[in-house]
Length: 215
Image 1: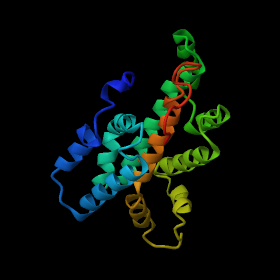
Image 2: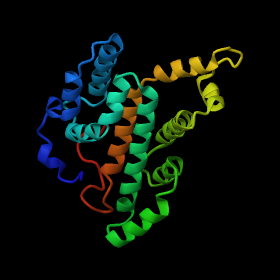
Image 3: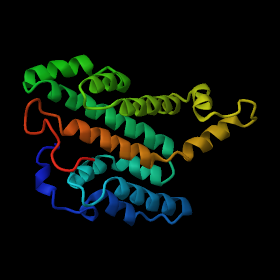
C-alpha cells in the first residue's frame, strides 16, 4: 500500500487530500479556524516543503486524516485514540519486515507480536537503534493518556493532568483538559516515529539507511 512513494514525490502539500479537504469543511467556529491555522503552521515548521521526505510525510498525513479532522473539529480525545491506534498498527505491520525479508517468517513474527502493546514495541525498536529513548518516553506518555481516555479512567486522568481531586465538578475539569490537548504534536511525533521505521523497513536493502536530509 505504501510502496511506490516515488510516484508522488513531486507533489506539493496542497496536492494532497487531507489539507485540501480541511480547507473545504464548512465550519466557521473560532476553535476550528484557530486549530486549522495552528495545525498547518506546526506541520510545515516540523516538516518543511523543502525536506527530502515531504511526499512521505503527506502519505502518512493522509492516513491520519480521520484523527486530524476530529482534532480540528474539537474532538481531541477521539483523535488521540485514533492516532495511537494507527501508530500501533503500523508497527505491527512493519516490524516483521525489518527483521526478515522472507514473507513466511514475516507472517509468523506478526502472529507473535500482534497482541503486544506499543510500549513493548518501543523497547524493541530502541534496542534495534531505530527509535531512541526520547521516542520511547513519548510512547509511554502517549499510552498513558490514551488508556485514560479510552477506558474512561478518571483516577488515571486526574493524575495525568494534575487536577485537584477536591474539585466538585471533576468530570467537567477532565473533559476540558482533554478538549484542550494539542493533538498536532501527537500527529507530528507519530509521523516522525513512522518515518524512522519506514526508512529501515527492509533488512540490508536499499532502505536500510536513510538518505539525504533526515527529519
